[in-house]
Amino acid sequence: MIKKISAAQAYPLRQAILRPDGTLKDCQFDGDELASTIHFGLFDGDALVAIASVYCRDYESNEYYVGKGYQLRSMAVAKMVQGQGVGQKLLTAICDEMKIMDVDYLWANARVSATSFYRQADFDISPNVFDIADVGPHQHIVKYF
Ligand SMILES: CC(C)(COP(=O)(O)OP(=O)(O)OC[C@H]1O[C@@H](n2cnc3c(N)ncnc32)[C@H](O)[C@@H]1OP(=O)(O)O)[C@@H](O)C(=O)NCCC(=O)NCCS
Image (cartoon, rainbow, N blue to C red; front, top):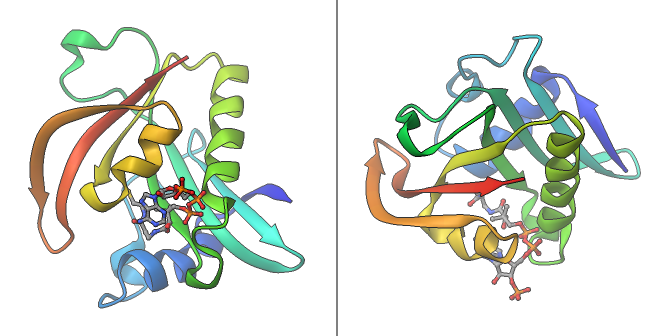
């Protein structure tokens, strides 16, 4: 089942999967508590096994991006269930919600290691690779609705 969750509920999985060498505090991001931010969780029974958050935020260079933008961050699936379609299921539900909310595009700074996952979900992947300190190489990705 996919549900909206609190930021605090998302932090343990964020930390375990995305900041394994960091602390829970490192997993608190700007905008986490804004009313416009949505944290999604996919549950297997009572267990939270996948998370992702979306922030009402246009891409910073808005030259080519028209309309209302949301940023996707912190997409993470518990290790035990990675590669079983859980991430795609959650991402599809998020895109469906973005359409209902009349969002024009969803963008993210995606880890290079995960870009094929986003390509499968019909995101456009920018060829430019840039480094995010302590996390590694990323590419800008976007999907229009
Ligand atoms: C990337 C991630 C969210 C994908 O979720 P998932 O549930 O494992 O992926 P799914 O099973 O829904 O889809 C798997 C497909 O994505 C592709 N893929 C790309 N990168 C992948 C990755 N790092 N791990 C697993 N699958 C990945 C696979 O090729 C697979 O396609 P296939 O089934 O045709 O072989 C998840 O593996 C994860 O949390 N990874 C660690 C954290 C991370 O990199 N998050 C993304 C930050 S931008």
